[in-house]
Length: 155
Image 1 (cartoon, rainbow, N blue to C red):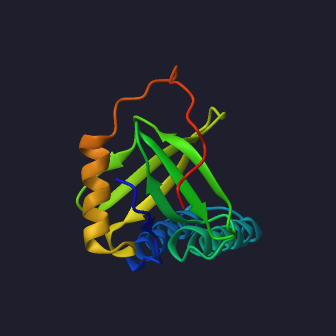
Image 2: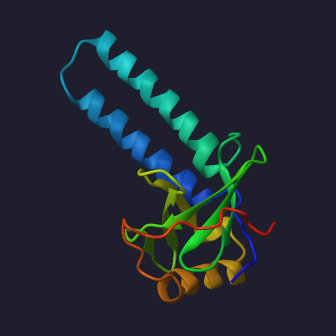
């Protein structure tokens, strides 16, 4: 599979982020804390919500991943909004379902994985299906001692 999967904005992910942040605000208000502390935590949650929506749901941040290009042997090229492109291997703990893909990518030469949440409404239906099939059946199990890969994607 060599076609890039373009990832756009997602209403579904926006709704999940809104619901999660709203629930956190309700929890903070339900705990008997000083009003100033509740206000500061509420402000922090609003800032977190804005950043999460901008980066993950709307994909407007410069480092937001806007395209994934599956390559061979469990490697992908990730394309960011600012034009940067990097390669990495798909981690074994990635999650695939009919509605969501949680893609964990370990960048070449790094130890920590980067997570990309891809809801079905952020990708064209056929491209989402191909990505899910590739992740379930086409990606070999790559362990921590995997061989390095030529980081030149075909864009």
